Image (cartoon, rainbow, N blue to C red; front, side, top):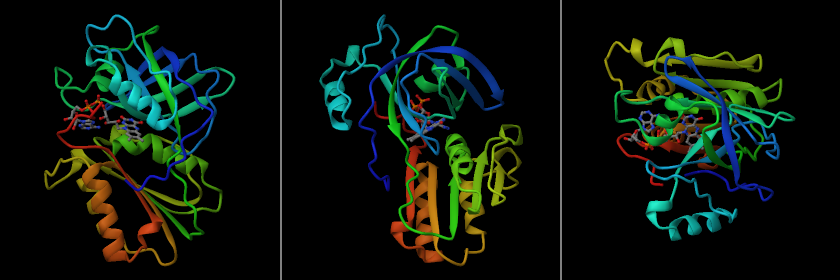
Length: 273
Ligand SMILES: Cc1cc2nc3c(=O)[nH]c(=O)nc-3n(C[C@H](O)[C@H](O)[C@H](O)COP(=O)(O)OP(=O)(O)OC[C@H]3O[C@@H](n4cnc5c(N)ncnc54)[C@H](O)[C@@H]3O)c2cc1C
């Protein structure tokens, strides 16, 4: 959806390992992964695919082909019993020279059960646990001059929004709307002086609409349209990404080519790999 293809050509599958696991806020576990000395630092919303062993698999079998179609065809050709789980995550921090990265995992759902395999892996992770990583490059690639940057996302988008904000030029102007489960999930990050960050917290919603993404959409819908050329990057639950795009195109009159939108996950539906 809306994502420009900029997959790195210089990538390889890497077997990483957990160095440190920490509950940083009520809804997030941060894993520090090691063994990634070859990983380039790309900034913005640099993301990757992570590969986890399924229950009962004693070895994590990674594809060897690295083209975007090649690895996936190889994955599909692998008997289901030997395929790993695959999930997309943003690199919250890449520290060149250390081989280390941080990834912030939303612990969604009920910790007593019902977590997806990625959230479960993060929740149970301890030093030495292994997982595969494939570099996917960056998704935030505006290719037109613009006056305003508009970022809208839910908690899964917080690592991306913080990375994009930190990478924007000092004179960037705009708004970032970020919905998180609780005020305790807010994070500090570098923001250009003329970029305003608006947080919305689901647990403080008076209307009781706790569907992830709805409050961020409401916040966008009550924002006065920005005058001038807008570049919008809309990420998070699929209904938020598509609803925000619809609003910007139909109510604000933003041209479709100025709106990138990516459904990071779908309410009630596990990722398909
Ligand atoms: C480019 C990109 C970058 C991303 N970056 C991050 C990131 O940095 N941090 C992050 O936490 N996520 C991120 N995501 C989203 C993450 O990939 C999905 O949330 C993923 O589905 C989680 O996998 P899982 O195995 O835990 O759950 P799944 O097995 O995929 O899903 C199990 C159930 O949980 C539900 N579910 C999945 N995610 C959530 C959620 N966040 N909240 C509530 N219910 C959910 C599903 O609807 C399903 O019912 C990113 C996605 C993309 C495409």
